Image (cartoon, rainbow, N blue to C red; front, top):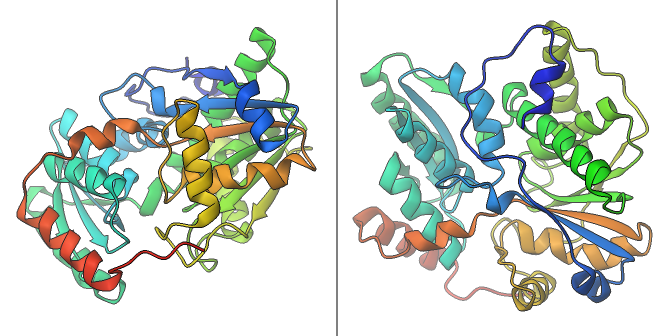
Length: 344
């Protein structure tokens, strides 16, 4: 189901990668734990594909614009890079990814192992050395022809269309299946594409809802201005394809109190949320989804009916047994920078 495609007078090239719609679950058990009257979970971790999570939504619109090779960047445990590498391989092409260090966890190891299986990895030993890794990735990708650059997280208008479609899909599920209509949709805020797309989709549908984007990386990168700029750029793209988007009642709120020491660093609140969801049979990751879930309790005071948009794909963890020199090198870099993770 791709409801956005049915609205476009002038189609946008699209490649089906995941099985959508992903499930929506009502979870009164978790609602009680966070103090909400109701809690829906949008299970993009169960999209039916080999691997992908919510990033498959962006890739369905980005890959038709890719050439024989693409270049991108992210952290060692970037789920975006893992999804891109897997999807490119499935279409007979190659992703070249430049990666910077982040604290080492099983989820980071699983994501990097997935990326190594499917793409070409260029490690930076620190964030300051990332430009050199990007240059090496670009130089290697050129051997296959003119490469296409995708920004971190796929956060460009074509990629944002995937989350616009996701919002329309979710709204249809709520209305057709009789789920409680949420007052707020809670999502991690990294590169901003998911939050921008959900906001646009809710404008298109005329929904009054707050998109609560929980910051999980540096404020200079993850902020309200960036999300709204992505939304405006994507609205212009939609207009070029015949669909006019008028800002509506849906709003955007950046939740800034869950970042902790920085990107990829665990927090006490995140660990508590991770454990609570695990008790309910749902696996989160410490970098993105645990921090977003940790915000649910404070948000429930203002928004009694919540939706948590689950973006992490547990299938990352099945990649752990891989033996690869770059996996060991990345672990050594991370452990030299952060020998003992600190929770706050």
